[in-house]
Amino acid sequence: MSLSVTQLLEGSGARPKKGLGAVFGLNSDSRRIEPGDVFFALPGASVHGNQFIPEAVRRGCLAIVTDIDPPGDPGVPVIIVKDVRAAYARAASRVYEPQPEITVAVTGTNGKTSVASFVRQIWTHAGIPGASIGTLGVDTATRHIDGALTTPDSRTLHQSMRALKAQGINHVALEASSHGLDQRRLDGIHFEAVAFTNLSRDHLDYHANMDEYRDAKLRLFTDLLVDTGPAIVNVDDPEHEPFMFAALSAGATLLTVGREGAYIEILSIQPEGYGQRVEVRHVGEKTSFHLPLTGEFQVSNALIAAALAMSSGVDKADAFPALSELKGAKGRLELVAEHNGAAIFIDYSHKPVALESALSALRPYAKNKLRLVFGAGGDRDKGKRPMMGEVAQRMADDVIVTDDNPRTEDPATIRAEILATATGAKEIGDRKAAIAAAVKALQPGDVLLIAGKGHEEYQIVGTTKHHFSDHEAVAEAIKG
Ligand SMILES: CC(=O)N[C@H]1[C@@H](OP(=O)(O)OP(=O)(O)OC[C@H]2O[C@@H](n3ccc(=O)[nH]c3=O)[C@H](O)[C@@H]2O)O[C@H](CO)[C@@H](O)[C@@H]1O[C@H](C)C(=O)N[C@@H](C)C(=O)N[C@H](CCC(=O)O)C(=O)O
Ligand SMILES: Nc1ncnc2c1ncn2[C@@H]1O[C@H](COP(=O)(O)OP(=O)(O)OP(=O)(O)O)[C@@H](O)[C@H]1O
Ligand SMILES: N[C@H](CCC[C@H](N)C(=O)O)C(=O)O
Ligand SMILES: [Mg+2]
Image (cartoon, rainbow, N blue to C red):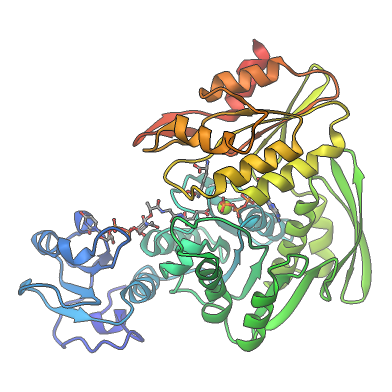
């Protein structure tokens, strides 16, 4: 379908001159402009896209949309809008039509990937073809495509969604990251239902403080939900109130979930093997089910997912039974092997509260020692490092501090920042060697947690991405 620039920018406040040709496509990266595209020059974290206007023009862009007057005369029409990131997102949703009609989104510091995956699995169980988009990439019941960001760039996102629609998929569950919300990557979507899992420290390298981090996440509730749509809030999280009030003031239908939940109330949780038996009350009616996942936090994730699924077309009669069939997202407290009478788990905890949740979930299974191998990513929030060291020191019996993705930082400095609080830990920088040493040390009754990289199949050192998989490192260590 071809659009005019006016149609592309509807709602942005701009009044483009008449007579511009039909838009071929759009891009915010000058290096990828094709003839007939509109170039959206965005205010970036490091540079302003206006710098790249000459390149975009050279490559044949039809017009430029930006938020401040660019220097000189670029030679093509320039359209100034107030919020160019939001305009870009809305334009992408129009250019890549048709889009799936039912979209839901989850935000929060931990649990987004798990919830999005669970919603997709519940839809599938109920006979609804669905997809999840987030940290893992784009997933349907039968296909997986790797992704780069948790919340993709608007253009990539809407292209992926159009491809899903073409496969007959009308239901999509999305992860809304704070970067994604702050950068308006999702502003082309009106969500059918939204959810909040929890809030704790993360990304303070990007957001100035916790208030700004929270405000970015609140946008999902205040700006992106359809009128009166369901807003699901985990009321067991100490930070839930602002989300509850945001939902109410936005006129949303508030659905609370948790031990204190009114929509889904958790009545009891009992361990059943590595899984758990859960009893809940859903709108007055009691239901019990086996959740085949380790960790109480997964109960919260599963129930939030059930609430999102029931808010987007799934019957209660299908939603709760589906929870007994859930598969954990890859590398989310995943039992990967049993060796010498010990259990080995891989988990994506790379934030203090996530690490704490994972260790406390595993403690009951450690008849002997609870062992931990972990590190912290470079070029990311440095404040997380001593906090994670403190959690490790307090909650694990044996700790090896190793490398995560050092990126452009000195790996030894990152380790030292963790070791400052994990004073009893050993240090083995090479992650493969650290995993081998931890596996070798396993005694019957031990539990080993390898934290931080979860599903990742790479390690970023400097700016190079090397192949690396915790799963493979464990398998090799077991083989000896
Ligand atoms: C800090 C951050 O979020 N950066 C994202 C942001 O880039 P930016 O605005 O900083 O870009 P910039 O380099 O300043 O450039 C400004 C503009 O000039 C354009 N440009 C640049 C160079 C050029 O030659 N020509 C050109 O047109 C750029 O395309 C951009 O539009 O917008 C880009 C396009 O959407 C993203 O790819 C990029 O993600 C980077 C790669 C990234 O690593 N982001 C991470 C931190 C992130 O977003 N993580 C979250 C949370 C993860 C989680 O908790 O799960 C995520 O959603 O993944
Ligand atoms: N509800 C929860 N409460 C506390 N910790 C959790 C919760 N859900 C998951 N975790 C922890 O956080 C880790 C990441 O989980 P998940 O990938 O589902 O979250 P996410 O929000 O998508 O994270 P990211 O922002 O890194 O993509 C898990 O491996 C686990 O350690
Ligand atoms: N989306 C997150 C992932 C972190 C994963 C961890 N392994 C690390 O490299 O810090 C980020 O980019 O901050
Ligand atoms: Mg995620």
